[in-house]
Structure formats: C-alpha cells, structure tokens
Image (cartoon, rainbow, N blue to C red; front, side):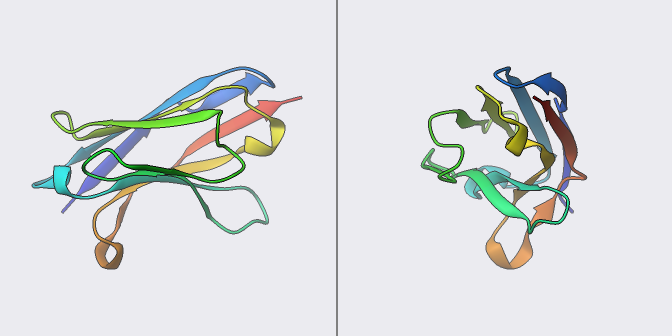
Length: 115
C-alpha cells in the first residue's frame, strides 16, 4: 500500500512563494506519474500540475509560469514550487501517484494566500 506524506503548506502573502513536498513509500513508484490537485472551499478538485515518470509536465492554465513541478525518483518525492502566489491559489493541495485506476492520495496540505 502506498502512503503519501505532504509538507510545506502554510500562510503566505500575495506575491510570495511556497514549496510543497510529497514523499511516497512503496514499490515501483518511479514508473507512475505524480502530481498535485487542489481544492478550494465550494470548488471542485482541480489538477494543478503533474509529472510523468520521464519528467514530462502538465500545468493548469491558471498556474503556468508561476508553479514548477519536479520529482526525485530516488527519494520517491514530488515537489511543487509555487511563486507569485495569488489569493485564488488558496486551497488544500493533495498529492497523488499511481495509475489512474488505482490512485493513492496524500492527506492534503493547506495553502493560504493573503491579499
């Protein structure tokens, strides 16, 4: 069973930066995509960024140019560097890994951006 532990959330002023980390435990994780979804109160969960096993990345239009996703396969860890944060980035951020049919999720980490 895969376990995901997130860290790095918090409160930051608009324009600031945060770096989220998500460490996964389990076998053969390096072959699966990893990524981050986010969910704000009253909104659906949306994909913020994802990265394939070979390093291909995908971003939501709303975060392109501000967020950077990366992974360290040796550590089974995925990172999300978030710069130029906006109040609308405030949400609970969840990391995931695994194939689409059997996804594993972290517990979520709160990001709050004050104006």
